[in-house]
Amino acid sequence: MKKIIYISLLLLATTSCSDWFDAPSDNTSVTDKKFFEDENSFYNALTDIYTQLRQPALYGENLSVGMLEFMGQNFVPVDENTRAYSKFDYAAIERNGILSAIWKEMYHAISCTNKLIKEIEATDVVFYNKGQKEIITGEAYALRGALHFELLRLFHPSLNENPNYAALPYMTDFGTAVGAPLTTVDLLSLIKSDLRHATELLKPHDPILTGISLHPITPGEIDSRLRTFEMNYYAVTAMLARVSLYEGNYTDAFQYADETFNHLRNVETRNQVFYYFTPGKYGPDFSFSREHIFGIASPPDGLTEVAERMFAERKIKTRTGLRYIFPEASDIRYRAWFNAEGGNEYVMSGKFGKESLLIDYNKTTGQETTSLPVRIPFIKLGEVALIAAESLNETDRPELAAQWLIDMETSKGASYVASRQQSGTLDKVAVREAIAEEYAREFWGEGQLFFYHKRLNHSRISAFDGSTIEMDSKKYTPPVPENAL
Image 1 (cartoon, rainbow, N blue to C red):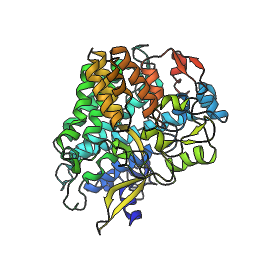
Image 2 (tube, rainbow, N blue to C red):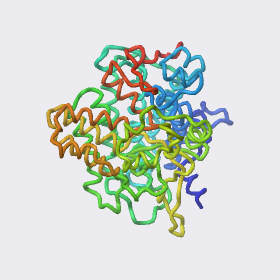
Image 3 (cartoon, rainbow, N blue to C red):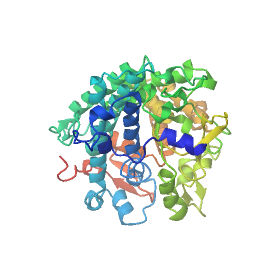
Image 4 (tube, one colour):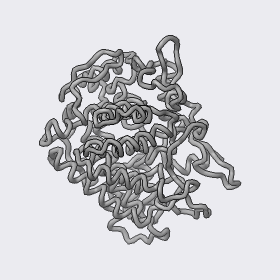
């Protein structure tokens, strides 16, 4: 039964976007008209886009435990590729086609969202499940905005460094033709427009707003228990918080972050779709998937296999000074994610390894609970809490900011900020330092630490061996692959 449930989450896993969106009919190919013939066909096309995101070129490795984590200096490099990552040697990285693969596959996924948007907005197909058409359309717009932002924060310098830098086009059509590169400012405007439009489509219909439904799911109906496997309404508000913080718009960043937490305030605990995991509550779910507002489903031979190869087989070590990053041994992230390898060396063995299972995401027909392999976090509660805290702190409300950090850390069995609060040292500078420390603790294997340093344009960062790296725009900004446009 577990296999049946798993397949239901990852429909048509081996089918590519080009298979869905074939050429005009020659009596052998699948035409748009033939393919987009009913409600389920649109949902299957959307599922295929999510499937593309989990490949190693994107979030299955490069943009999670792989390239970005070595650029963020979380792991000790062990070979030519990982050394190139840690040294920001983009010429060496691109010799293996890594940057080209990221660019190509991300724009491929974006192109598929454009095809889906075009077809669903023009279709005369009747959608029998209420709100299904709006949900699918909203997710497609949200994905288009979110994926463009992922490319922006990788291939453009930080906004403060050069707001007029232009390298990326904004694709709104299906196909390989692209427009001229746009400036960071113009791209951000289009990204926010797509994300805001997505909230308008999703808000009246997304079941995540009311929480887990207890009635049996009928064929074709959106299963509220699985909404965090897709770009749901709160994932979009969280993305808007991420984008607003990137802009330095602290008012909007806090507003969107705070709205995301309305799920925890407005939905009964037993019906919440995402929430903070607490000590003793997470079981074998070492990635704390219930904190994922949106995560990408991964098969057993996906992220888990990559993590097993890196940490169980090759024993890739964490950066020097892990215990200084986690000074409180009670922190469940430290206890769940890392194994000591002797002395002061550690391996991140637990978080995405084969022993980590997502629990209680679905039930069999006999109402037995099932477990699934780990998934890839895209945006989660911890980041949204940090966005809220930073926004409050930078608008001179450090005490309110501290409470967001305390709530987050308490759920992890930690008291870093609470201890500072008791000692009376929680001014704006102290809260800023506490936020930086949480970025170093919260995102292991997720690629977010590098983007934190880049967004703030840090001139120095700590290397994996404890030394200091002098940073500049060239190190923070990979070049657009040759002939990419």
